[in-house]
Length: 96
Image (tube, helix red, strand yellow):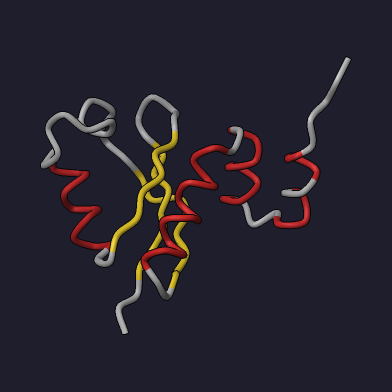
């Protein structure tokens, strides 16, 4: 069974990059070396791994990656810090 990982990198400009892979160490080396020349991370090196989670199917990993990419910075930071109980409240819209 192939295992996939969804991961989040903190870039040098204090932004986050979210991706998925079946080989996290190889993917991290590629990000860090600038292997992906035109990628988001290439111009924001160095990067630091701040979160990763395992998924047991590609579809699950893809859905998880897309979900996290849509999250606000505050919600991503709660995930990074392991504050899972705060995630639902960070999803709520605030109306004036």
